[in-house]
Image (tube, rainbow over all chains, first blue to last red; front, side, top):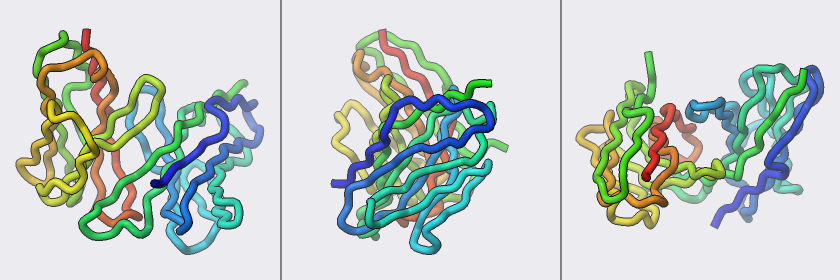
Length: 118
Length: 114
């Protein structure tokens, strides 16, 4: 079964500093990979996704993530944090080999809460 | 225009009661889901439907019964509510069942069972 590990349940950064959120997956076949953001009292919004094109994926709000097969990682970064980036971030994977009747089943990591200090 | 809307936003009820949560999407998507988020923010899929057909039933107690009257709606009925059912329930939709299809989430229904 797929599993996703997000290192660090909480990350605190200063405004203007680099944001780095770590995500590692376990799968012998590289899955589809996603980052979602959840603002307080809201649902999850897609930040970016990796399918099989470029290993560096650019998303919304200045975020990007790099797929590294050798490290089974998909870390999320943003060069300069903004106060509005304070939220919960979830890495998720979807098994590439589950097609057809098996459906689309996202497995989420435990989430990382980002706090941005002024 | 809200893409995925679910009602109610908050639901407080007593143990043993039966309650329903409704979900509608206006994105024209074929596939809809229910996810449960526990108090530690952990998200787990419960059900998925594609064009009104049940696709995923993730070992959820049979007190939970989803119903999809059409592909734009997926409701969740819960019988005999228990304390452990307290959580935030998210409805979501995707264009189709392909595993690369991103999910669009509603804003959640916070269920509190007392």
